[in-house]
Length: 352
Image (cartoon, rainbow, N blue to C red; front, side, top):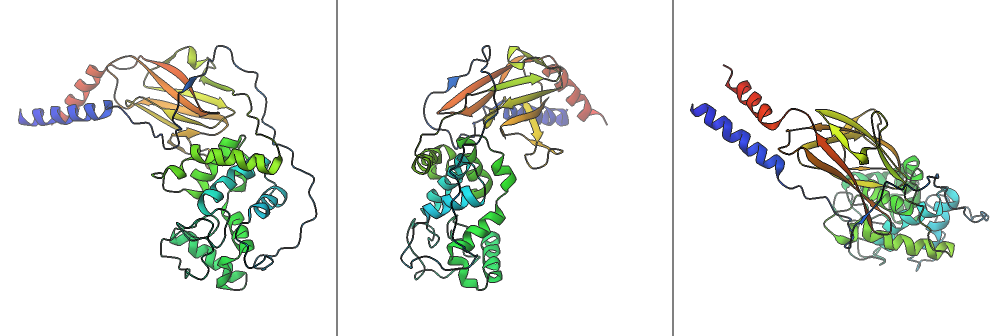
């Protein structure tokens, strides 16, 4: 009897924990109302086309490790824009998205040390890979990334070239997954990619939130193109495995599949009893926990961890487009009931 009582208390605690209200990971949520996106009148979908860049002009030869700049120069914004758009081949919005993080981290100063944005620290700081101090254009902080930067500087001729703008840009190009960055289709997506996939700053600081850095991206885009960024029309749909519109109602038994197609980056809120997995961005064959999706088609697999007490619930997709837009997908659970599941668990643990 004592064993059964302990088992029942354990299951009860697990049930309460599973149904506790989840806090949405709103690190980059910008305060304001969330707009509801009506799926009954979808926008006509078109592929996002990168903005045309100006005709490339001849560039000076800048080999990694060269010192071709005045000693007093600390802001390299123009040089960075030129390298990103003309040498790396980024679209204007992709360059602006990446540069918003470089500005937030260092104010485009390769001589910057953590906490002193835009300041030349070449005389006041001795570079050490393992000191945990942010350094340079991207504020490289971890010992592994700083050590790799130092090894690259040595390969360019001298360990002290960690301070050199050209060396830092060349090293950054080696670090960045260029294919993934070039796959971004909007300015906000490029901004969030730069924050979450490249910089990976501590999200407890508001300056590290993609939603905050997006305002910087808009300004950089305007400064270097002479025009405001034009948002593509929002296109979003969620289809079941048989091609039905999930927003019209989705019945879930023990498992179910959805395919979400969007031209915007999205984040997901889900009920506590539901597990949602999707292929990892870098490995389409691997199924991992799903927190967000990139522009394009993303397959989702839904499964019930513990059957819910009530059949009705919903998924909520949040998309950032001049503010947060919400898309709701209602779920009707038709699988095994909670009491039947609980009886099975008790019987399982009670079996000698």
